[in-house]
Length: 182
Ligand SMILES: [Fe+2]
Image (cartoon, rainbow, N blue to C red; front, side, top):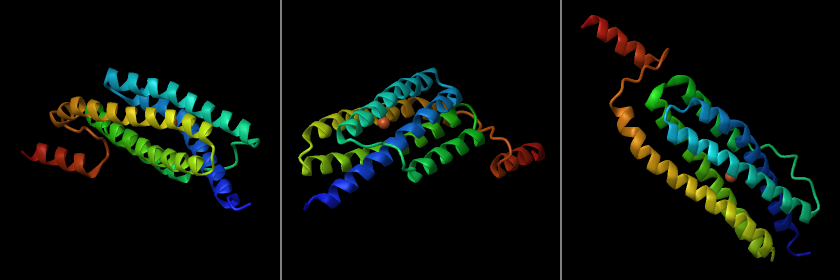
């Protein structure tokens, strides 16, 4: 079969996305909890519900393809989630919100790339039904990214006007030291 290689790759990429989405289902409640802005918190909670639907869409594609969606670890998403968790530990208040938005937008862009890839493959393989389903998810990831951009326009001015009271980092130690010296 001439398209055998691409079909295998398509399935592999879908498994990767399935694992990535499931990692997000676990990470988003933590991101919501860490948000100071009520709007950001609500945004993460809303995206959690969307993400659960993204998981279901992938499950429905796999049920038609006749295989299990499990068996792959998305290391890219693992790294992005880890970096996001570091930001939660290092910053507070509006600055932490700004860091959370930055982390979440990296996640969205990563997913947008992933879905764009599988949609192109689905079309090439003549799987237009799967392509349409994946396009719905892609559209939601893009909308989430745009919402995060507009939220950053509210959060960044707040972050700029506060002191980053980030405990334990070199920068805050230096700031504290110079404050006491003054
Ligand atoms: Fe998603």
